Length: 267
Image (cartoon, rainbow, N blue to C red; front, side):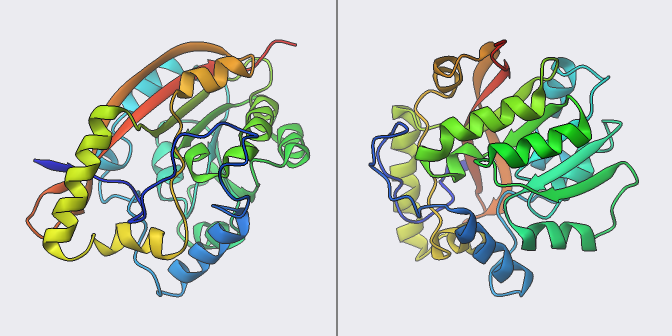
């Protein structure tokens, strides 16, 4: 059995939309993520909860992704962190570029054993000019991102979607998977907080993200976010994925996700 949980011990704010001013601009900023990865690299924080020992646990949606992305374009792994997932994706794609807002995360990725078909670069996804620079180097690409938008300040989402469009170009697709916050799983989240209270704390890998001052931001309708920005949503849906993070009673932490496969605006 699994317990549904968010990455932070602190409850996330209510659903917000870009430009409402409901969430402080500093929440989940690039500098906050840089501090987090710097502390992980120094051993001051536990390994991120989104890393997993097996490919099946880390990217359970891989078969779906492989069946929907054409094989003739390079792949961008946006929000690659320490490159664990990037290297796993490289087993299935000819060329993969990992991008992350944190220079410490990219340095950590480069220090690991890097497959010959993988490279890394630093990019703040809200930096449209930076995305255009990388797009000029890579050409059109498919883009994978997992839990990136919900880890960014909501007021940056419009710029992030424009940057994703620059990376994808005319032929590329974006496969985006983000944590879901519907009524059912918010209820499960309340039960998981009860479970955490019973055990005294969340697993360190989960709690450390909250301790670093990072807070998951709710995206009520991921497909709607893309459609409202002019994207063509090819497919969308919901899934629940199990992690390999375990609670003291032996149950695993489950994450409810929503996903989108989309093409950028044509104009």
